[in-house]
Amino acid sequence: MVKLSVIVPFFNVQTYAQDTLRSLNANAHRDFEFILVDDCSTDGTGELLARAERELPGAVLVRHTTNGGLATARNTGLDAARGEYLTFLDGDDWLAPGHLRRLLAAIEELDVDFVRTDHVQCTGRTRTVHRVPHGRRGVPLDPRDAILPADRTTAVDYPYAWAGIYHRRLLDAGLLHFRHGLRTAEDRPWIWRLHREADSFAVAGLLGVFYRRGVASSLTQIGDVRQLDFLRAFDQVLEETARDRDAEALLPKAVRTYCAIISHHLGSIERFEPDVARSLRSMSAAAMKRMPPRLLNDALNSMDADRARRLRRVKRRVAAR
Image 1 (cartoon, rainbow, N blue to C red):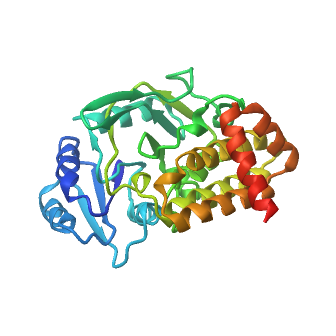
Image 2: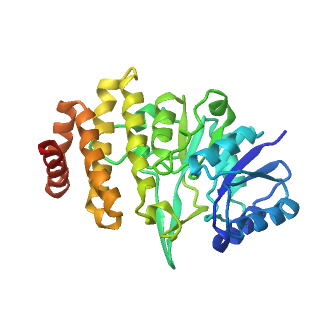
């Protein structure tokens, strides 16, 4: 039986893919599989993956005939996965040697549904450690207890799918798939669902994932219409949380987070193409209109003046048209 499935989507990352594949080779083990999903790359990524299929122990190559985006590529990998445990890596990031074995040992020792880990953000030559925003480590916890309080950064604000490991029972329960077609913020409804519906989790102080930030081809650096998918992602968070048995307690956190992300994008609106910037303003106003008015007002009143002013301005301007 395959012990661990590692799902790695690739799209036009030939500059970085060799680093990624070398790090997988340094983590290879006889009962690990590496599901390499080529999301219809048009550069030299496909050739690198074809070679990896031959040379990387445990490699399984799956090719898309059309580009579907990160969420869809991860779902392809999940559908092909055979492991008792699963984890993710993006095609332009890399792992420390032996990290996967330490990660597997952590979840087996803790005997939980999923484990979250810290990571190293790499921007050029700068390295910054980012930690899971939860104080208790190395003990089993209730994932629901890590969502609140609403006015603090909590575990659901640390959405990175690759910063952890997940038991197959979550996949069998329908909790690990991403919303098909989301081009950005696909991790947000995913992490909220895990914390609402899984039975147990833990935080482990492992540093073995290196996240490459500032890649020119990354959607976080491109101001086109695909960036607006964050609105669909957070609409899903609100819709699903509103149906939860603890909706009254959890919705203030969901609304406040949604507003903070909208404000973040409005605050850097100059990076968007003009048509996309106009759509961002109008769609953001529409999103706020869909939020429960009392919770929206509470969220705006709890924010710092600049962020709240930015949101109120867009809300008023669009409503006045």
